[in-house]
Image 1 (cartoon, helix red, strand yellow):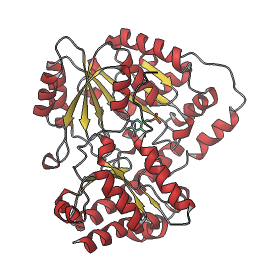
Image 2 (tube, protein in one colour):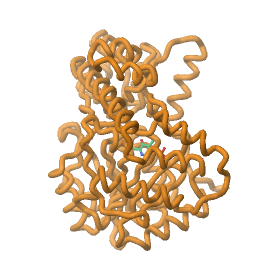
Image 3 (cartoon, rainbow, N blue to C red):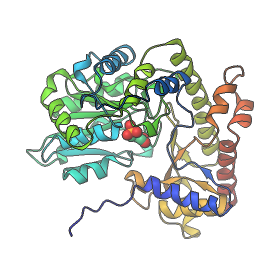
Image 4 (cartoon, protein in one colour):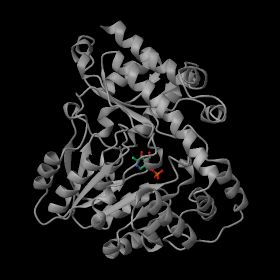
Amino acid sequence: MKLHPTPESPTLVMHNMASLRETAGQPVIKFGFGQSPFPPPTIVIEALRDNAHRHDYTPVAGIPALRQAVAAHHKQFDLIDCTDKNVLISAGSKALLYAAMAAFQNAAVIIPAPAWVSYGPQAELIGHEIVPLPRMAGKDWRIMPDDLQRAAEQCSAGRDKILIFNAPGNPDGICYTAEELQALAEVARKNDMLIISDEIYGRLHFDDAHISMARFYPEKTVVTSGLSKWGGAGGWRLGTAVVPEGLSGLRDAMLGILSEIVSCAPTPIQMAALTAYQDSPEMRDALARRRSILKAVGTHSYEVLTSAGIGCTKPEGGFYCFVDFMPMQDVFAKRGIKDSYGLCEILLQETGVALLAGQAFGMAPDYLSARLAFVDFDGRAALDAAKSETVDAAFLQKYCGKTCQGLAAIKTWLEGLK
Ligand SMILES: Cc1ncc(COP(=O)(O)O)c(C=O)c1O
């Protein structure tokens, strides 16, 4: 048999290692797995309960009313000019990202490093050429227009070019300004690229100020999102894509692929999503509380880690910061730690804190880095408390204590190594 080399996702491997430790009775602080700490909003759970009896398949593109609601949502919050005809719903945005790439034959896919763990393996499975686009600490981990141009020039001639873009970012929490997006859009336009803009953390911009790439490159940007992150419903599997009007061929090709591999997103979940996508006072309040807690935890994470003498992206949205241990490279070398997997393993053994190694995000193995998902706290309790209490330092210690402990443990460990 000649099989594709598709090892288990490194995110899950780390999660399993941490779980094994826990089963052996040793405490673990789980900063490795990027799952929302919050449950779905109550009105959305109630909508799911009310629709549990629905069992028919839906159209592959999704229930028309949901597609309309998703289009209205992106129009209102992201200023994307779209209608239900531009929207595809499927079982998670992962399936839509795959379908968008698989719709092309022999494309060149430009993938930033670091980037979320699944873009590369998806492009590889499809058989596309992969062109890495390095992001660097010295450039604040941002994609620079010059670097994007260089990557475009590295794509083999005759191939369609696809840029994978993601902000707020996983693994970094980085968001881009309108000017930065505009500059990247200009390079994309000049090189006739398709941008797949993964905006799944968009509604979790800490200041509710997400800016979509589609505003600057509307003609060739596919925006993906869904309920997994802001809706706290990763296991429900509800993803969305907005495909520009002028790319109806791409939309149809995606639909064809989805019809062969997924059929449709689960019907009761689509009905629940209809409630999540309504701009109701309940949803606004639910999202505002989630954002304020994440902003406080994300900012605290950044402050603790940078005060320990290592680098860290300053998250502006989502659940993550990207930690750069290279300022302590010599100290680690003395302990025989030479790669990011080794670093995460020793950190887990000596502190009980689980991070996910930078290597999983496409960084060179010897670049000592890791993603920290600041989500190991009881999201339900924190949400309830945020109804009546101010989200400040005391709140964090009280309701996000485990996360604070984990951060403090990393700092103490690093100081002990020096
Ligand atoms: C950046 C990013 N994109 C996409 C996904 C996949 O989301 P979904 O649950 O919609 O498939 C994730 C999930 O971790 C993610 O972090």
